[in-house]
Length: 242
Image (tube, rainbow, N blue to C red):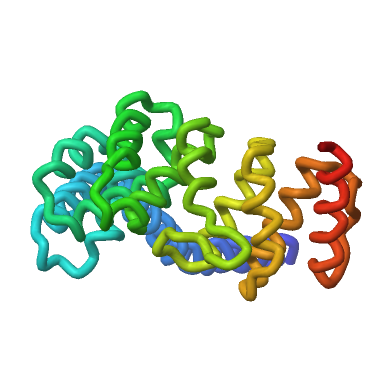
């Protein structure tokens, strides 16, 4: 009797183990497949990166490529500055614009002397049309974000006045970034530009001007609405300084 019970239990245990093995087998195969897939992807990644870099270079070198800005941005992200700076002088004007914008948008190269020198060269172009071009603004803004004194001075000179808007051919949201930099760099010579910008119909411009003035003159004229009140406050403040 005892032997029969033991044999019965052994049969149940054996059956359970076989069932578990049958269940675990597909899972083990799936796990091995996932590991193999991940390993293959990791091995192929350098090849894919190299292919993407080649495609981006080829796109920039071909004027008809519709994604030149994205290509310039991807190359700048990879810090492929030697290629970008070498291509720029012989590239058509629209491709040059994408190169400058791509470098700016990547937020890289600020500490690279080659890129800084390149941007200074673009910013110093002096033909009348390029004086206020979008490309020149990107170069100047790139330098100004490191508080470059020459770039700040040039941007201020094109900032307009009470009756004339800023001169650069960029959207008001972009110009607002320049006004923001005047505050961050504590560039006091731009105070008149900031003051006149309080009248802007572009809310981004008016807000950035008000914020920068508050940095230059902390708590002198607390943020007021409408901005016309703040403007009168600063005018009174500066008249007392004289």
